[in-house]
Image 1 (cartoon, rainbow, N blue to C red):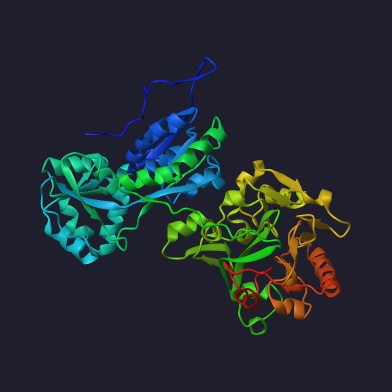
Image 2: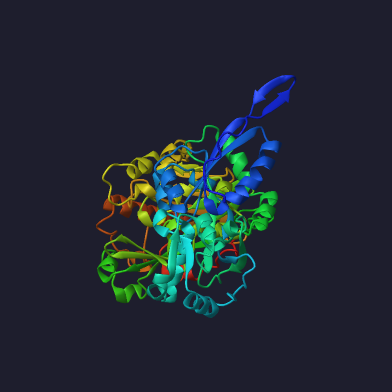
Length: 531
């Protein structure tokens, strides 16, 4: 019977080049047991075609996650979502996240035993109620299959009823061993684990409607001895060759990224849905407007992707981290931005980018209108991009005790490459991102010390200003109301508003107030675009 243990004692291979013997450099990998069969099958091919060897360690899903979050220095960790504690730990390169495969909880019987019908939730329920005993991995030990199946029993409303029949085991292999020895009638664990065990036969997988699939995602560690080597391994584990192996061991390979749109000779602007803010009445009043004046008090939270012939720019990154949105699914994720603003998010930013053919690593530049929590939630995913920022805003973001910001949303940017755009801007405080006048970041301080707006000069759509939080509701602008009293600098905000109004008159630009419900909900959303 196969047990889970570190792969040790693998002979060091030698490469012969020009008559010189050179030991292969070692890459350390840690992963949950659900992907062990696939990884062990893939390692020989990787070592044969690369100058590296792999030392792999396997454990439970939760145990692996804890090791990585605690900073155990593996080069390539493979983690099962949700993993906010891993992202928050700073021990993985967030932008390196690479989905590998999904695995389902399956049912096994003893070899030669009649296979039951598990094709529908009703038939699964009937089976579990009719058998005298069944085994599955103990969730208290961190086994992801056990955690998943316990939730299935609870969601089906039969956990207490079948509890006396349950035989918990230490891992999937032990659950299958109990079936093979006729200690229980059926066993459940990840389908990929069933296929590697002797004395049992796979019946099939549970319907996805009652048993969501578990994803496995590879990262490059921030402690990687050789980050390029770690990246090479991650690319191999997400290759078509690896996908074939995942299928052979009963896993579902992650779909390849969507094809990128055909290159355009002009800039394109994509509008992404990064959530909605529900604003309490006292929250509306802080903007010196009334509910009657604003009509709709909800505030959309858009993000924007600019695709230019010379690169890409992501403007603002949402209000709830993608990891929290994935954890809440299929329900929306909820987050109180402050006592009067309550965020609701149903779509991840990375899934919307992926639908356009882009991964975080494909984003050339990242910039934010300002550092408040509802604009920065996914910044860590873009730590490999070049951050365009003014030093005064960067200092504001990392200032100790600043309650208006959430540093865990962007702590990896403290070590990321960044450009001080104030050093290379025009006398009008404008930074030309691609040096052709199509994408300009313009200073408009006051809401925060380095608040700014984005101006696009598009070939067909004309000049558009994406105005950040210069205004929140249109009546603030229509009736020339004083900026909110809780601005970083009210007088500076008022001066920025006056300056921007003059700019709009001069350039005939269209302003998009980023939180205006009517404006943002009326825009065409990705994959449609403005050009």
